[in-house]
Image (cartoon, rainbow, N blue to C red; front, side, top):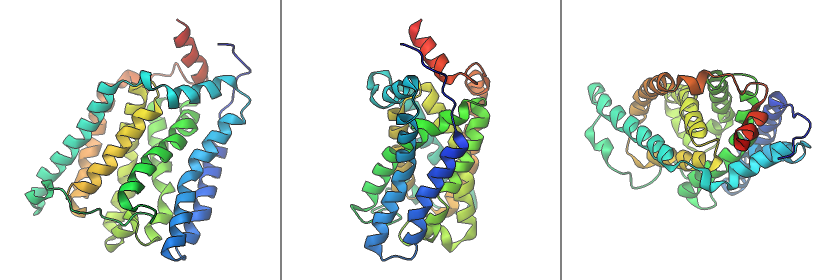
Amino acid sequence: MKTDKKYRYRPVLFFALAYIFTWIFWIPAIFLPENLAALFMLLGLLAPAVVSTLFVLLSGSDMLKADLKNKIVGFYKVKWLNVFWGVAVFALIVAASILLSLCFGQSLDQFALTEDFNFSGVGIAGAFFTITIAAIIEEVGWKGYCEDSIGEYMNWFWESMLFGAIWSFWHFPLIFIPGTYQAGLMVNPLFVINFFVSAIPMGFIITWVYLASDRSILACMVFHFFVNLLQEKIAMTPETKCVETIVVVIATVIIVVRNKKMFFETDHVGRLLETKFGEEKR
């Protein structure tokens, strides 16, 4: 592939615009009627994907454009066994969390499937549609540009830490919008805190899925969908989800220790795109 002028990632500008164009819709949705709020929530959800895509298309970098294309349409590159193990690890996290919660007075009935979701969705087609479209749209935004824009400047360990924190806080306005999963947590401040804290170790796990599948957006979409589905259809109590955060942290430590080279290598720093296309040439 013909190399072009080296592209300089702009993570600060990206996050500023992603936040602005998400929150500019989500904050008004707090005060709007349900049907109109649903539209504003969808527009806000789309913002990171739109900003990400525009950053790539307007970059002037053929490498960056080719990289996004490969990550989206390169279905043949997905290492499905790695995706399966990612989903299996999270299923084990859920099971271990429920079992540990028995020590705190919770019930084995949590292994049952819920009849409905814990939230009403954004209106258009209910909760199932919401978690499906969220998995697709969010990953286009976060993996299309965001994670690489941070990874260009540091190893994947610190990238995962920083991304997890930024991704977590991005959800903040949702706790005030009636009908959202996050708003349902407002019955107890501990549940709200747990939601935001749990996103940070989850950032490590989804980065692991991303890198293990050659930076495939599709792999992350599938994993994100199953995480959302398990979180909603397994009858875990909010108390157990607090226990789950501890289990996720333990799983994250194990994943990082077992993949130290992946998380701590710095060969890609400052030349992420060049390394990518250099590997393809050999």
